[in-house]
Image 1 (cartoon, rainbow, N blue to C red):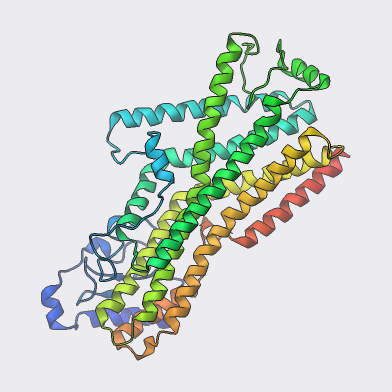
Image 2: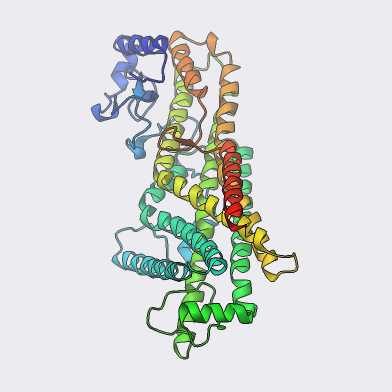
Length: 470
């Protein structure tokens, strides 16, 4: 039994399972038996409706479903009267069209050419990431240069984590996208259109954030002129003939001096192209998680509207379809959380280090007329905004869950038949729990309190570092 459920609800589960064998005879003739693999799968976590492809009937048992595991994702949603079979839910109208255009996303995973192309692009990005780490290690004896390059290294590392998410988890993300298009409800046109508007807003804001971040990163290096002191430090640290020649991201060259021609032109071209690819995929990565959350919250708001319009005497089929679709949404969210869970903790840690180092850089500047002031302040503000965006997307899903709870609670469900009352009571019990993505169960729950705690931690670390510097 589920450890989260109280004993009263566990007794309800046992009672309804025993009651299922004595259901209506007419439904017994029309409904087939459910597959054994779809009932009581794994450790119990939440209440689910284990039935065949249709909702209702003798086998509509309320069971404890394993929402922590993957389950059978293709069948997580039951066919119900809220959705017509000939319509597709619209989502990710901008992002994946761009991915299709550049050949980084294909519906045919079995294509050898597509796999080789993705492997080649990912290999170039891995080499680019590794080569960007060593210059920071070489500069560790010069604190000013080290802190500048450390900020770049953390920034590139964050980009690489986001990029790896797409290349290594692309098949599972495609599965979620396929489920969204085929099983999400669009019967509430105003909510569906609002989700599309929010998706476009997220895409525009993410693009602007990434564009300003990259511009602030490369502006001084490409268009600025280094001081004589900086040139001497670079020549001493890297033993290069022309250290005044700038690169968007400084790379490790080993014994090769790539500041002399023709190596300089080739390395600069490779640097700019790979930085452009990183810009594009970085934009895709930081916008994907909030867009998923917007559409999940939209489905919860859609269910709340359907719950308000579904009366107690509408019939068992319609009420059970609503409950089943809610369970499908929860399982979809759990699978989404499982896919992105390794990224959550890494991204938060890297983002906090990035913000802390930016504050340290800002404190080392002598005046606001310093050319680095604009770059450092811009990157720090963008780091705050990106982190806030990431944490707030979890709150959006939880708000949708709270909206559904209020709608179901006020829908006069207590006047329905005993079967429906039992199911709705369990649904309300589950809706009381917050629905937020987390890192390894409750070790780290990501929400706005995480953002506030992270900012406090970043400032505390900055205070400690600043005391050592002084």
